[in-house]
Length: 167
Image 1 (cartoon, helix red, strand yellow):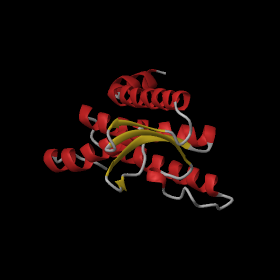
Image 2 (cartoon, rainbow, N blue to C red):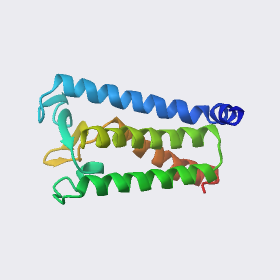
Image 3 (spheres, one colour):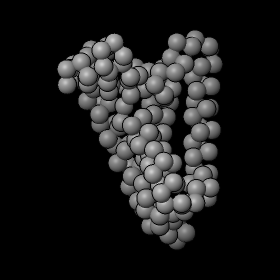
Image 4 (spheres, rainbow, N blue to C red):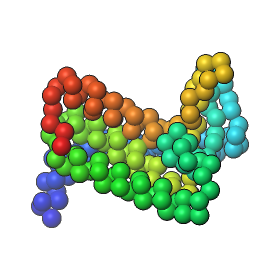
């Protein structure tokens, strides 16, 4: 029991970051589901930024959404678990600085948020909708944003500028 307590205290920034991301992800998805009809879009900043409620049955940025394989859910869930295992393995071997805990907390919080939805609902709510003229970026959510920000900070900024040990 003391080992678990010491681990939780040592990794508190990681767990706090994960909790914040999962909570924000769940709250924003709930708000969108409660206040929008599926497919409904509302302009926030003209056509550049809209909130659009869609349900993504694929993975990041809608990849494999149109795939109709009978084992699609199982395959995508399995890929998510493999990715989660890989991320946790890298974290275990990495330096445990606060910045590293924040980066991995963002990545893991986003992963847990979307994996929970995939298990519970078989799909993920996406709602951020950006674009210029006829080009629209694929829809995404808080969990996707957290993963992207965590990876960006971890790989680009933290690794190259701080020469930290990652795995």
